[in-house]
Image 1 (cartoon, rainbow, N blue to C red):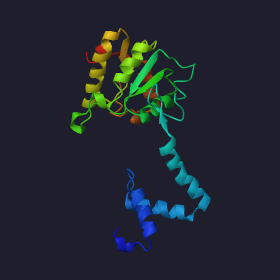
Image 2: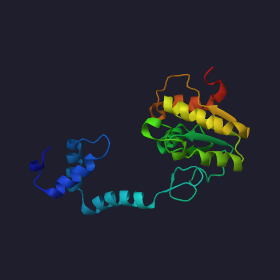
Image 3: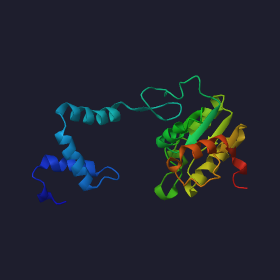
Length: 207
């Protein structure tokens, strides 16, 4: 869409911003902007402010690094959760996916990515050391590795396994008996829920 197709630079700027979002082409961006233009001014302000406040006020839980409104997130702060079991995931989306299964009652640890030398991401760029410290200081009895079944995911699993092995805790991985794809979010909730409940010892996962 060329510059001259816009009669307003304000409109063009708004379309350009929407088009920066993943999966939003310029046609969709224009449709969204035109939709917003039809809404009452107050509603558009609420819409815009929700992102501004999100960016300014969001914090990360000091225990698990999940997105939170408070220093300790609602999951870590919930006394009815199993505080002896921690599920290690790549990102915040994975926490939401596993929570949707309603099969897991433990806590989480969000790494913030996986080891990927091609992308310049090493262990020091992730929340791995904080996981080791957490296992050392808390009464954690089991760590579940729930990373993607990609080469990078496997590399990260092995790295964490080596780091945690001396600490004398149970290290498991979610059972991937049914092909659920590489990403947790593509698993249907029943399959994923079952694979968490039927987890296996990490050392046996490649035999």
